[in-house]
Length: 87
Image (cartoon, rainbow, N blue to C red; front, side, top):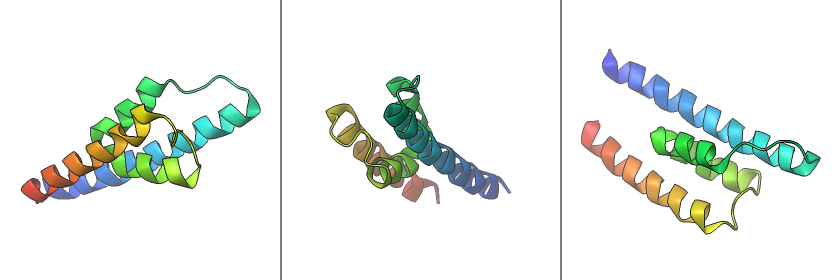
């Protein structure tokens, strides 16, 4: 029961994170107000790192910023490690 809820959480948080990266890229192109970097990284940190990494490369967004191209893969590695211990 709890594991099913956790899988659902993982799916939702990664979809939301991927969408946030796409939305921030759209706003950057349109010259609109942006989503703060700390929000993007926070969503990555709460197990949204796969969605963040996919969003970075799919939307070509934040791939030149060391804060992202280092932090997001490290978070993904940590998350995968933790998930192998949980499951």
